[in-house]
Every structure is written in C-alpha cells, then in structure tokens.
Image (spheres, rainbow, N blue to C red):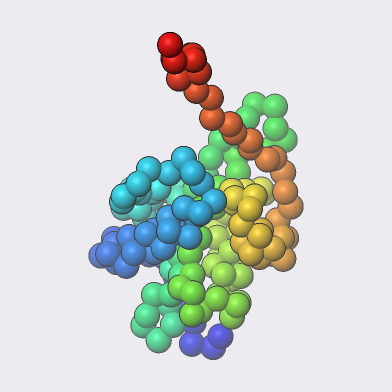
Length: 163
C-alpha cells in the first residue's frame, strides 16, 4: 500500500486507540468465556505510549488510523536462552483493511524496533480457536510454542447434593 505509513502512536490519539481496543475485546469474546461482561480494558495504552521499554504503533492511510500494535520488552524466565524478549499485543486492524498487508507492516515495524534494542525474540498470544489470527501469525513466521489450558472447578458447596 503506497499511501500507508506505520508510525509511533500519540497520546492525543487515545480515543481511536480505545476504539481499537474495544474491537479486540469484541473479537476475542467468543474465544474466552472468562472475560467479564461489559466494558473491559486489556491495556494501559497511555503508559505503554510513554514507556521507554515499549513501542505502540499505528498504521495510517490517508490520515486515517486503521490498525495498531505494540511491542513491550519483557524479562525472560531464568532458564530461557534470551534474557529479554519483545511481547507483542494490541494487534488490531479495522475489518475493511484486512488482507492488504497492513498487519505485516505493523509486525515488521515492531520487529525492527525490538531488533534495534538488541532483542532477538518476539512472542505473542493468540486464542487457539482463533484460526484466522493463528494463520496470519504463522504466515508472518511465528510458530506455536505453548498451549495454556484451563478448566473451571466448582466449590465443594456447589457439588454437594441438596437434601
């Protein structure tokens, strides 16, 4: 896309960024029964924008923000090869702009930001049932690493037979 730029997000764009976050939450609700009802927030976007160890980026086309993502440098577990890695999140693209290479440009920008800071590994999380997102990340070069599993348990009182 010739008229697209990927650049650092600005605090004054918070209303659009919050709308992107709402889009992420709504897209993920069908995959996560643990999410609370009503408005929720995954990110402290202003803190991420202002952090020296994070980079929040937006994709802009003709002055319109159409996508976002962030990279946050995190400390690795003591037993892992790398001392730090870049965790990617806030990956969003307006539906009408999907499939046009914009997400790839966002990923490449975040990857370059991390590489410029000496980071050699990037990670992200995606719901196992989100096949479209998984395929997009695999196409970008990501490989599955660890599957987190969960189950609900009931309290003892809930499982006791009623007398």
